[in-house]
Image (cartoon, rainbow over all chains, first blue to last red; front, side, top):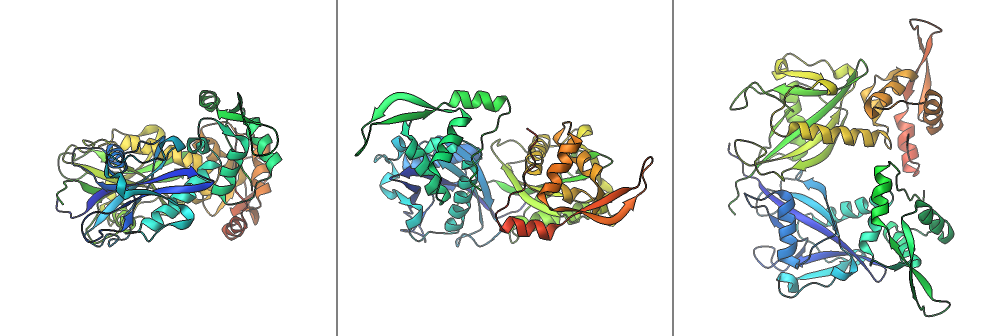
Length: 228
Length: 228
């Protein structure tokens, strides 16, 4: 069977920092596209699964491991999406929490950098389209799965969670309704910790109870935060 | 760049007939797996997009065109999923309406056949897993997109629609609630046609108003039929 199509994986890794949604990009070191920014990724080895390939590429190119990894889409309708030869890319969508936002220097990470979604550089291939689809998927998932917590530190202020939803969904959120809705799900709970804010009373820190969420999910209870 | 991975597309085509969810299978004509049933599909040509490849394969292998086609998932975590050599498969999920359930004889269609989901033959490769994932996707989509109408004739009895939901979701449905919910969406409307049933009064035929649905969708109104 003769076929000249190469298979690559790419990862859209989202982080959240200073009230901004960030995406991880790497600067290409070799070849025609040298110096251009692109998503981390690369060709799949003959003896490795697609899932293994994407984890390896993230480790090699940026020295990071992720909390959440899910297949997004396979890009291959355009036969000339790579100027070198025909490549289809299986894109994965990943989330990292803030403790992993710092890139390690002992890898190719000096060529890896976080960019805010609102300020991306010019990108190689169709990677701008891939990121657009990933943002849409994140926005949609945020409304029926508790993925937002994967982007926050383990303990967070309620206002941080609210700000995260407002930022990623790009819409104003009614504070009181949001709080009521989230607390009614029963998976976000108070800790015993407080932080002193710049003004006003110290604010309580909250955390996501993953075990409780998984239990509720097994019982068929759905997690839904709609703002329509 | 040396890589020995082949790229294929496969299609999970669902139909609905006699209150059963059906899937289209083909019997393999050549090679090691000759005589085995499998999903329609095949290798992508070097100069054709993934989307074009799957439409071509459906035409060649079963002589059918579909109403709805969407990428499901790319299977390639298991390197030995094809006993011949490494193949990754981009799977597409499709729906056909009853008028296209009859397969044309002027193609490879004598080797294509509809099977009820509850009575599948032994399948080649990982195709049983692929079908399982497609059924789960269909069940999920049925609850937030009006995909059920793609499986029904243009005009249908309300009881047909209700039966379709009950069959595919595999759960009992409260008739009165279901009717109220569907009609409140405003996208299913009465026609002027009635059919005489075996017993009782003639029953009204309904149809799905796709234009109205698209208009509502643009306005951000969501279509949701939950039975949780």
